[in-house]
Amino acid sequence: MTIRLLTLIGATATILASALSAHAQTALKWAHVYETSEPFHTESVWAAEEIAKRTEGRYKIDVFPASQLGKEADINQGLKLGTVDIIISGSSFAARDHAPIGVTYFPYIFRDPAHMIAYTKSDVFKRLAAGYEEASGNHITAVTYYGTRHTTSNRPITKCADMQGLKMRVPDVPAYLAMPRACGANTTPIAFAEVYLALQNGTVEAQENPLTTIEAKKFFEVQKHIVLTGHIVDHLNTVVSKNLWSQLSDADKQIFTEVMQEAAERATKIIEEREKELVATFKERGIEVTEVDRADFEKTVNEKVALEDFGYVKEDWEAIRAVK
Image 1 (cartoon, rainbow, N blue to C red):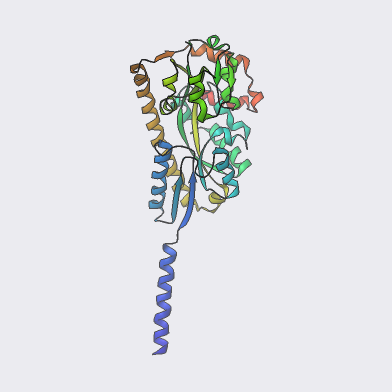
Image 2: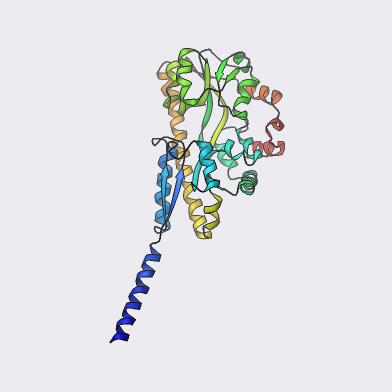
């Protein structure tokens, strides 16, 4: 009787251990700086839920939006410290570990969003992403279109020379500063949260951002002109920490990659649709929306700005420009 009871207890313990193992969960943190209403957040939440489904609940991913786990520099550092596992961040931060990947921010390197997406499937992207991974240990799984950066101003602008002397707020990122400075603008690195007030009180006359940001932050209320300079086709990377990526099985790496790329495609589609609608919306609000002589801007930038000054490689620039 005792032997039989011990056998039953042993069998039950084995079954319970197997059940617990089957339901073991790895908790992960996914961080970004964007608001909960933005597709970069909504599609990250979708991806977190989808990964949980496809891995039968083995991973529980909590998404932390709106800088809850720190500013963009902080969450990039968090990948190294182990305080976050996945982030969404721009290539300007990846370039701090591997300068050449920042070439994607050089003005007019991309013709349009379709060209940027084609680049993410190219050999040059694979090479730059591999260089970043070798330098940082972190792995880029997907790239999302963030928006094309345009200029707003209280003076009309149709060509590069029209920006001469323009007091313009530009983020303190070398590649972002390239076009305005090449055209003669006086750039000022005002904190993003203070841009609306700076435009309103005349501290600066102009700024640059994607149309979706111009709408969300209501810059159109304090600017007379939206100038479609289209100088940077901006993007965000989905990055997995070295620690997490090294622990994933090949099957799980495939699941994470497929889901994150699908989420990036979903967010990209939303942004592209919003941008198309916004041009018409701004015109309906009585704002002057101006097409520019893009070739004039591009020519001036290429004549006055040296790739090498940013640590970029000319061969990479040429390879990206050649992507179809």
